[in-house]
Image (cartoon, rainbow, N blue to C red; front, side):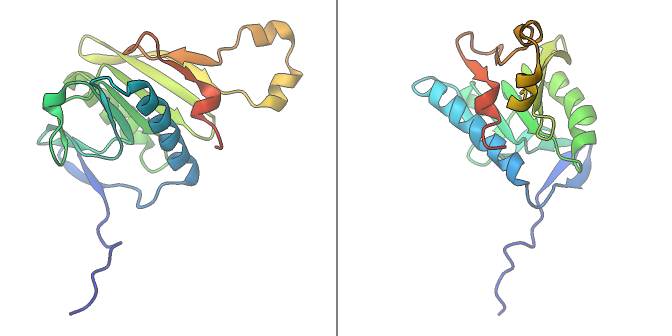
Length: 187
């Protein structure tokens, strides 16, 4: 009997009824952003009913089983041993070239139709976060937040800097402030 190849099983999602293989390995930026999100949300949610998950299957329908990069689930009944059944409250996808089309089109549509309240698309190269909020049965772009490098900030006039946003709130928790410096730390 030969030794099992631990890397032979490529993770996949079911998107619109089609099996779509996921990137076999995330970039260091991708992984760092997810770890930063986990740190921010886990610290905030300590002692609260909501929980954070990373790369766990979410079963929306038979045709749509996704594995988001990061999510927050507040309804305990949706948390199963091996997956989440139904819409998380917050879903975050860290964009990669291989999955960008799915994240921006099919997943955005499905997340809205299934009731995800807030959806973030994080762009690691641009150090930006697109925040979509549920409106009816669709997710609408609410805002885009960008982390500005120090060298660019130093060149800006004070008037320009005064218009920049360095932190934002999630619609789920009124007192949770997301600092862009923390979100993109070490990226």
